[in-house]
Image (cartoon, one colour):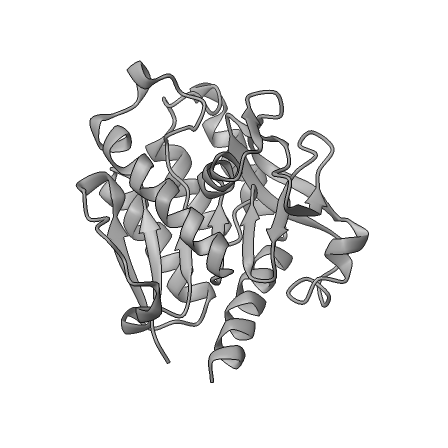
Length: 246
C-alpha cells in the first residue's frame, strides 16, 4: 500500500508531533504508512499524488480570514501552493481529508465562503448527520448524533457549489462536507482525544480560542466527554481508500 501524507501547518513542535501521532494511532497506521510535510517550514514542493494513497490536511493556528498583515511569512508562501494542490485533488477526486483549518482552505479553494460567523470555543459539541451524511459510505455506520471536539475562530458559512453537506452542529451549520466521492472536510477534529485536546489548549491558551482562565474547566469537560464516532469516520475513510487501491 502506498503511504498517506499528512500536511501540517503547526509551528509548535509539540502540537505538530501530537497531531501526527494521533493520526497514526487512531488510523492504525505505522510511521512508514503516514508521511508528513511541515507547511510552515517550506516543505511543500510539487507533489506527485500518485505516490500516495491519500492526503490529510490537519489543523493549525492560522485562519483563511486573517488579513495578509496577520499571516506569517510561511503562510503567505505556502497558501498559493496549497490552493493549487487542492484544485488538483478535487479535479482528480483524489482521496482527501481536511480537518479544521483544512475545511476552511478547501472551502476557499472551491469558491465557498469562510467567515467568523460560526466560530466555536474549545468544547465537545453535538454533531448531527444530515440525511446525506447518514447514507455516506464512511458515515453510514456511525450514530446519527454524536459528540466531537471543536475549537475554531472561523468556519465555512456558504458551501462550495459542488459540496454536499454531511453534518451540522447547533452553533456551526457546516461541520462536514464532501466533494465528489473522495474529498472530505470536517470542522470538528476526527483525530482528537481528551489528552490531545489538553496538550493543545495548553499550547494555544493565549491564541484567542478561549479565555486563559477557562483552561482547567475546559480540560475537565474534555476528560468527562465520551468521544468515539469522529475517529470511526477517520478509520472508515482510510479503510475505503485502502480497499479501493488494493
